[in-house]
Image (cartoon, rainbow, N blue to C red; front, side, top):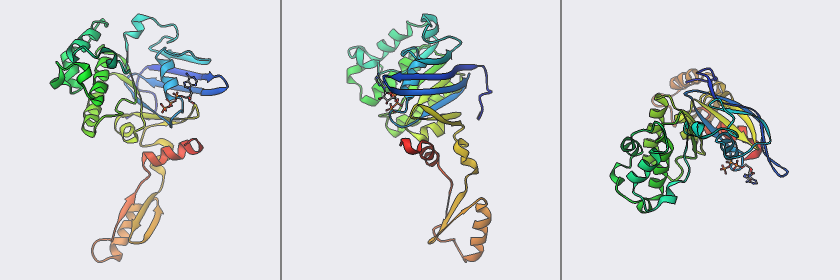
Length: 283
Ligand SMILES: Nc1ncnc2c1ncn2[C@@H]1O[C@H](COP(=O)(O)OP(=O)(O)OP(=O)(O)O)[C@@H](O)[C@H]1O
């Protein structure tokens, strides 16, 4: 997995992006590049500026300053052909309560020059048993899956996913992750925002942590905030020791106890630990 943005030409290039609402700076001098084929997760607390940033990249909000290029164009000026190359997962299906799943996905497919096969898309999001069901008869999680189907039916080169698995049951999240991996294998670039750190860890090549409108860190989930080089904690019985060489310490302990080392645990900082450190006073 790439820790730096060298995988391909940048599909998203942002330099010095700033957005204000009155006196409030929602996005503050943000710079970022996302190469083709990367899955990038934007993390940050409520109000950090994730949606504002994403909607600027999607062409739905204006910016106050900075340069933005998405698939080689400025989203503020891009037209229909550009829009057909990007996929956005909105809460769209709610507006079509009387249509069936098949009708709705088929209807959206016709907006695009080279759509995916609607039946395959329905299967990919796990709604094959609901093909004939009307949207109004779907559960919240099933509607969200349908929204994902509408976002990918146009076979986008670049897919935006804003908190895609909120409201999914654990099994639905797993199958959604499989879908994202499949899209990635096919070469789709994906920008996702999420509050689930396990989701970021599972899916993202790189994560960016944003707090108070500022990008605090960008790296692979394994290396974010110097994660790999942080010390491990070895815990046993009532003792705890921070160490760079946990294997050596566990070896020593094994000599000290005749059988099992009592209550042995080796802990490394989780992505959540690093994330909470990074957002610090913004949490
Ligand atoms: N249309 C608006 N008018 C005024 N202020 C806004 C507007 N949209 C967002 N804001 C403010 O800008 C800041 C960033 O909001 P944004 O929606 O981008 O955050 P977020 O990171 O997506 O949060 P969440 O995780 O809660 O979805 C917040 O303080 C929010 O109150």
